[in-house]
Image (cartoon, rainbow, N blue to C red; front, top):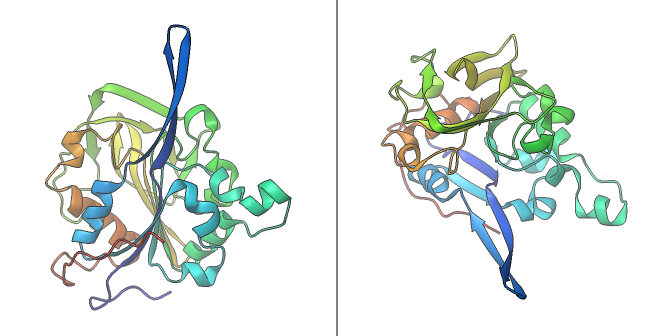
Length: 274
């Protein structure tokens, strides 16, 4: 896979960051139910569009039907972002879970895509890495071999409601794109262990927070905290350097880190949703 050029916008596939809430309302003797659908990636997706990227967004409930199943389908993208979506959504397709049919292992296909030159960014959350109660389970999936971190075998959340400051170890690393080394406080993260050949760019309380590493011809990034609430509070999401930080992370992962904001025309692209 060749690196994107300055005349070709970065092609980004984002999966996850949506959920459905089913609420039971108890009012004395009576009760009723309501259902709500929510998305948390809006600011992030807008930031990518403002950076001139071509963005395809696959919501959590769409992964079974829409997430690429072949290397050829993944080749349409320069970098794939997974955020707050567990491994079961990729491993248990409708065909397999409902009808016991053999289907491609989407995470295995994604791992091969990265080894072949693609970019991968996993963003933290309750359903990232190992996740709440160990339910995200990426350490037991084929993706564990290409992520730049080793995951815990139990609930990996570190909750910091009082706030935790990031400590940038490598402020000159191109993955940061020249953003300031002082970030707004975060409210939690997934505890990870950096692999020996990876680079820890930033830490939180000594734990790896932003880790990058090569994977054969590709690159992978682990961002242990969130891109949206709740671990990313409004101060982080509204940070003037939020867009630049994420644009730089994605460009680095896609082996396009030499491109800067002025290198390709910035334009808002249509968000592809179907």
